Image (cartoon, rainbow, N blue to C red):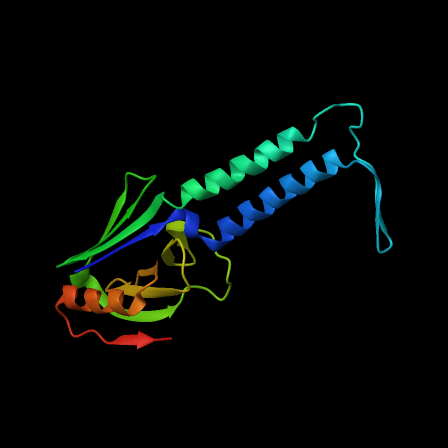
Length: 180
């Protein structure tokens, strides 16, 4: 009925951190190759501290390249696979043997809402926090599923309307899909 794959390399928080670290490595490499002191609008940056060690910045250049290659590889690493079948919702993660199955007959309500108020969010799989179980890799929207026992699941998705409709059809109930 519904299938979505979310890849780890698309997470904004991780992508931002890796890019920042790679930029730092390339700046440190440049600074090692040009060790002269720099005076930029009143801020003086001293000379490179390892003057007597030849090619000391090559390690920074190599680390910058390794970080960029790792970022490119992570685009193909599956983090969460969300599948809606008749009667159940299956959330499968890459690094865990634990598959989360939510019986759709136990669903009490569905809400489409923003995942978070922040634009940079960490990837999460089966994260229990503040009474909500979170599943997220990337995107800005989520479907909040509340079951009959009051347990809440927050499933991040790129297609929230389609996911909510397929969950409603899977449950066989006339659930109202509210938007927050």
